[in-house]
Image 1 (cartoon, helix red, strand yellow):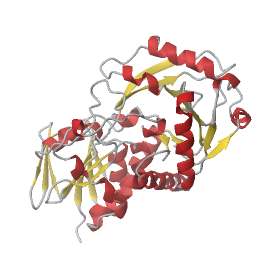
Image 2 (cartoon, helix red, strand yellow):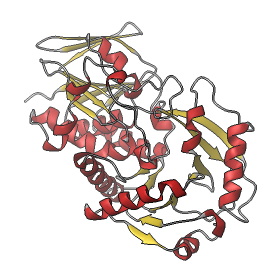
Image 3 (cartoon, rainbow, N blue to C red):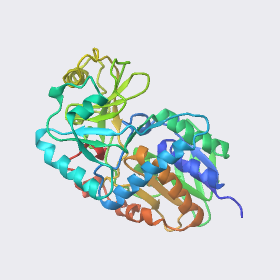
Image 4 (cartoon, helix red, strand yellow):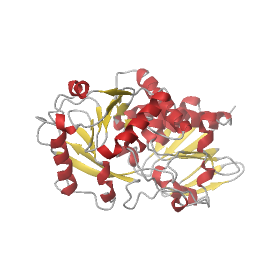
Length: 392
């Protein structure tokens, strides 16, 4: 049987995970990326792997299974490269959100997701510099959650794909897509063309633009405009004298290690000021607020120096759930776009490759078919009222 010839548009974490899984399966894979690998949302992610409060239950299950898939992939790494740290998450909430956090944690416990209420002393043994005054109310630990170093993870995905024959075209934009009963054709901005059996659209926040080539409207949250659901500040610090080896989710600041003593910071309540067209200065008001909150959290942890603040632009279907499946009757164009791509990617890569290879639908993806989003706009879907930390 001749191997399928499959193109993928998008060199982010989802496109690369699908490319890897298809190439390992024996498909002839060509990946088209308009900039460079990981240039979009994948390079501006807090990269916290979790299934912490994600609903409905089928979405929780998908994320929980993907966390396990990440661990298996890390354990199979041949040369010791580590992109995954299962360091757990410690979380507490503001007074107004205490009840919601407790309800969420108890629901997770009922689903079999590791979660336990802990004392401040337990957390302070983990992070000695934490101020006693920084924590109030109930404190929860989610030990199975991980942080990920995106560049190292993307390197592993592409090394596997490349060694199995996948071909990469960077700085190469697809400007037209045509589909017939027998093939898919792509026209490229350098004047070239590609023809093959199937296409996977894994273009993240640009997916609606690609769908337009097929005459299809796809409802996506607009990440090009200020929008706290779609846009978020992400700050990277200089190396800090802070003994942090875990993920902290707090009302003041989300803080995680970023290697070499650096930290990644978020303050989700500031995201209503996040404008992709105007990233903040490292000495501006947003940076100053993050520095002040850092001092409120930690004692004897140095003077925080922020080296970079970017506005992350999320790849979010309008209802917040993944869109996975064929979008045309010919079943030659497959859409793979989602929020939580860092968490979901290794499992999604495998499931998409299995669906394309066997033409057998996966029951795990049944609730996430893209037809619910086609022919609609973001205005047809409600905006989240309460955007809890893990929903990002």
